[in-house]
Amino acid sequence: MSRRSPLAAGLTLLAALAGAEPAAALAVEPADLPGLERAWHGCVREAFDRQPAHRSRPGRERGALDACKPQEDAYVAALMAARPIDANRPALAWARTWMAYVVDPLRDWIAALHR
Image (cartoon, rainbow, N blue to C red; front, side, top):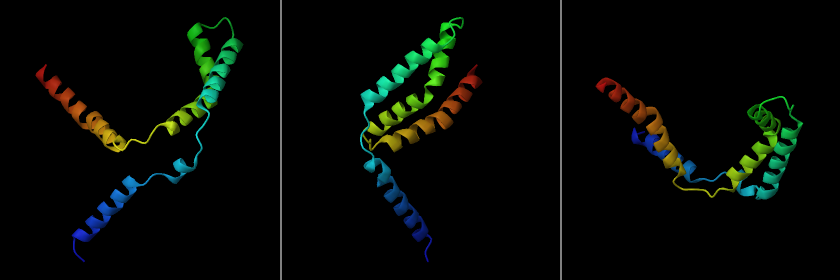
């Protein structure tokens, strides 16, 4: 067996995985986004009203948001599922990772050397 065959097989597998869409995403029906948003906002309003009046406004807001975390999670998950699939998203994620872990620290290090 040649050395190229495992590499070719790996590249073929990666190409097939990159082009495949998750089956679960195709089977899910679109969610009622306005309904989920109304439910989350209603929960936040009610939870804010139930907070003790002696607490600060930011504290009452944090408490209300904490109390309605499941509704917020459901709404955000539905928003993310409703987004169109972008063919460039993996490349953009790779570029952001490269910038965050390689380019930015290197640039900061070089800037620190010049100081």
